[in-house]
Length: 376
Image (cartoon, rainbow, N blue to C red; front, side, top):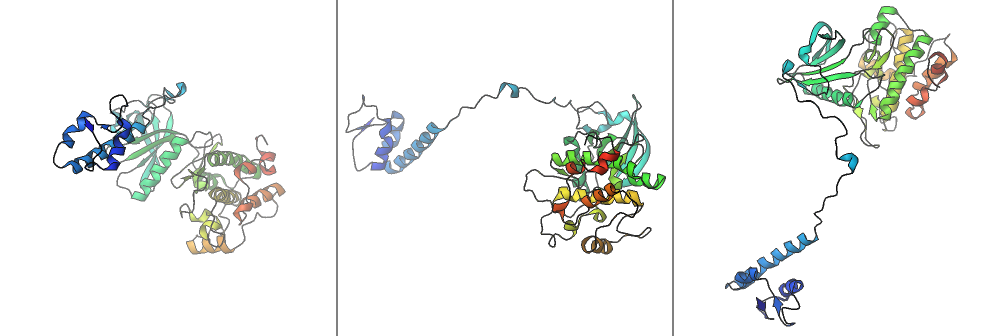
């Protein structure tokens, strides 16, 4: 169909159609229009139809400029890098979010190890291998905050793989809302339990414990994970005196370098001064340094036999702890300790967080190297 210049067709419309003119088929004074547009131009309402054609041409022009080609993946990326999980089994009426073969129905409950935070921890035994595990079960009707903490712990346990972190062997979500986490069993319990049973730790014993905790913290911090609740009850030990970090319910994964980490979580007794009173300390809470403060208090408690900011037998309360931590001097070691131990505690319990040593730095401290079997 050929259309000559006319006042009926706007100049903009003619310019829009100009690129489609084949020079061999239309004279210079005419425009070539595809026959598909002819019915629109032969109706009485030409201007309205021309507007529709203009819009259609605009869409066509945009589509011509799209690059619809997709790059092929690299050869190394054409296959999954990790094995896909096995389909869930009906055993135990739970969905297992792990690639192992242990089902809940394969476990026998032996005894209750503890209660708290809307759940129960059981000592369980695998029926076929007779291997012992700890099974943490959180009930479906627990507080939403507790459930968020459980899901946070699940996420971190999936990310970690270190001999100084309690190993997770399986995560199970039951249809009625319960969540179960199968972990390695540490037969001596937590360090606070060991402290009550056997008494205070010597410097050489503390150095062995410290070395392992620092390696765990160094691993976590290198993977941008802040524990935020280091204390004796969250450090588990077995009969060979292996110490492992546990309980990541209030931990935080720092996805970006500039992520803030100033939420008020964790056990307040072991919180650093800048978490209690961020305004006084510049408002810049360094979570990694906060873990080091908690480590210093933990080690001092294991050496003294009681919480360092309180007198033996004194019951803590929030106001007393806040005043002692924020306005008092950091606790110091008693007379008679080695210079290395005194120096180590001072490196941990600096009220200015920027002056505290990092976990990797503390691994090279003379106190750790003198007594422990580490490569310093």
